[in-house]
Image 1 (spheres, rainbow, N blue to C red):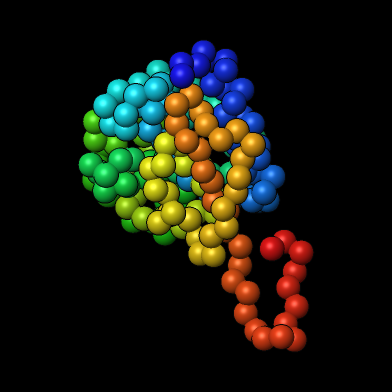
Image 2 (image 1 turned 90 degrees about the vertical axis):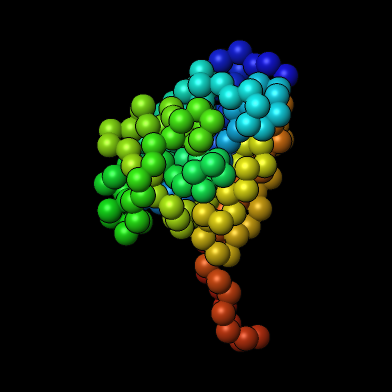
Length: 185
């Protein structure tokens, strides 16, 4: 299903707001994006990458997250070991190891490339621990979201031709039958 840029922005904005409402992220938290633009535009993962679609997706996320001071990390494909594009400042603050790779169309993907264009000082890191994430096209972001992971069901189940899932995290429940838990869980 082909979407106009405006339809893409509108649908993605709804997804992001659903995830933000469920995850209750705070300034300084990180949201990870995994995305196959191939599936967004109606193709098969890795076969129909769309740099233009990647730019619309990343710009939409940045327009929502930056005013909230929420960090964006964009996962690349398996050809770069699912490394993530982040701002150098964030990588250093969080202690994430920077690796030597630059995303390309078929080794990283369109969203990673767009992130490198739009970030001030982009780097790639191999592993992160994000508080929440959005997975557009079943790209497997779970390895980058903090334990304990809780599924989030955005109202919009697809973006173009791509299935959409999301995760948030919560602190672990500890203790026994007398334990009490706070409201943020």
